[in-house]
Amino acid sequence: MENAKGTYSSGYDVVVVGSGIAGMLAAIKASRFARVCLLTKDALNNTNTWLAQGGIAAALADDDSPEQHLEDTLMAGSGLCNIEAVKVMVEEGPQCIEGLLSMNMPFERIEGRLAMTREGAHSKNRIVYAGGDATGRILYETLKKQLLSSRGVDIREHTFVTELLAPDGEIVGVRTLSGEVLPAGSVILATGGLGRVFSCTTNPPVATGDGIAMAYNAGATITDMEFVQFHPTVFQSPQGDMILISEAVRGEGAILRNCRGERFMQNYHEMGELGPRDVVSRAIVDQMKKDGSSYVYLDITFREPAYLKKRFPTIYSMTLQHGLDLAKDWLPIIPAAHYAIGGVQTGLFGETNVGGLYACGEVACTGVHGANRLASNSLLEGLVFAERVVRMIEKTGKEPPVNLQRGGAAKGKTISLQGGAAGKLREELRSLMFSNAGILREEKGLLAIRRFIKQHADFLEAQPKDRLSWELRNLFIVAGFIVNSALLRTESRGCHYRVDYPQPDEAWRLRHLCTSVS
Image (cartoon, rainbow, N blue to C red; front, side, top):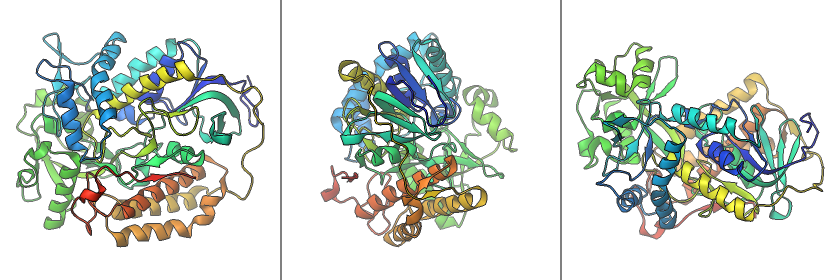
């Protein structure tokens, strides 16, 4: 099988695009009955999964139940959750945790029982975690061992998929940046999020919305793009690094203080610091505006240093590198873009409206999060729906086409923005998005972004030649989805807040905004 530019692979039963929790688990499970190729545009571990700190929510405790987990998820979702999808997630979640335990995932334990913590908007302690605050990294290492021991999985790092090939609405393969075409019976999109469309984000540089843009171009329906969750507590270093401060820190009692040292969350939500993320993020922005400050403080100095070093080793170490001691200092924090709730519209088995194309993880919109994601439901969703996608493919999947039309890449004007030009355009877009389509939105600012995007219509219609240009084009595409949906939804709900329409509108409840080529 050649892998040079312009060559064609003999094909795979399943091609997985992405190497986070959903992509890795899907590849592992599918390899039991299929020829699988896992493609990732960077290093295998360069994902949001690797960075995840908090843990995985599941109703495992004696005083908990899937019904209570369902209720908490629906409450956080502000009337937009797909109830059937949420039921699937909370009911199948515990067995997914058991599956990880069978892979020797070393979750924290107390006296032999799984340790569980609580995070925002949960009514019970139900988040299992590992390594204190290193759940994502340890989960990645656990899945990686399984992946490398799985027969029949080709792993290709640094392979950027640029196009899903779906003539007549049926997937036949993928095309990579090098020009190689891989025929595929089924394609599983697990490309993660789009946080890099905002200037302040917890996401790594690879999170440029590639999967959503590709799926749209292939004819898939994109939905709920106005809903982007901002994590309330992010420490921005003097060098500009964005360091996530896990919600579990507030779960262990940390409080938020304004620049005068006053606690304020009790004035915004009955659960205080453990209110839903959208509420906490807006409260922080409100305090910053009232005080004319550029941050608020997170205070957990009442906890013993030894406890903090053990419970939050990653956060303790990273903040200490910047001269702040979690046990002694209040941390200056701001909200930052964290999670894309919208994405590729799927059914209960990750299926899309394009035959043979599936999506799971952050790139998918299963409907479980509604208008605002409940903390630590993201890794759970990735686990549950990766399993379900593979079950569906095992029943209905096809072999790769043997007579794939071997036409070249799309013809037309090509573009390559190298160095400073691409960087300048990217930062202009990201800054506009954070200022005008972030936590607080209104028509004037959203229209300003729309005009900026239209000014670069020629770029959007051209064929990129390099990775930087492809990523920038994808960022423009997903930015357009976010802005257009935010303009259309003339109400405030969950993590979509319109300053000019500050209240929920019952007419919008249960209504979803969808976009497709057709």
